[in-house]
Amino acid sequence: MQALLARVLTFPAPTAAAITGHAFGAGAMLAMAHDVRVMRADRGYFCFPEVDIRIPFSDGMAALIQAKLTPRAAVASMTTGRRFGGAEAAEFGIVDATADEGAVTGAATDLVRPLAGKDPGTLGAIKQTMFRAAAQALTGV
Image (cartoon, rainbow, N blue to C red; front, side):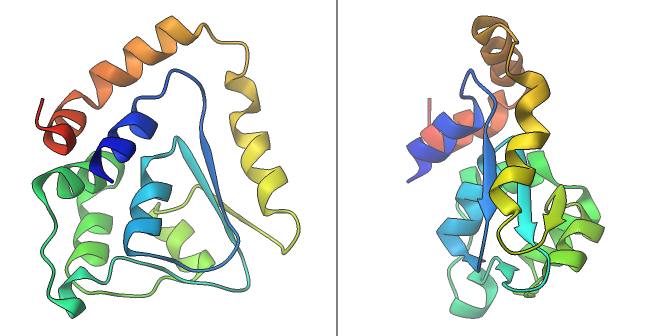
């Protein structure tokens, strides 16, 4: 799972997570690894339940979350087991946007569309540099 997270995190093309329902645990981690996240506005929760199910974050998973979120959002999501609805997840910067049912995928695609023409080699190198510490923590390499 951690190798997959590192691969998505540093993938040399734009990635978008369309969260049409709940995103918990590994699903939330996979969404976090993407460049942008769009969540359904009216339904579903985004949650890292590790504190409630007594499973500490691995160093790699903690590094991924901390690389993507502000310290305020990382603390609020990692230490509380809080279930964020769409509006609250957007307020904390956990997701980039919300959309109505049926429009989530389109909204996520719209957010990455401006990156579509970017050179994959350059984009991949930038992501490798930006997220090197998290990717190394995830893969142990």
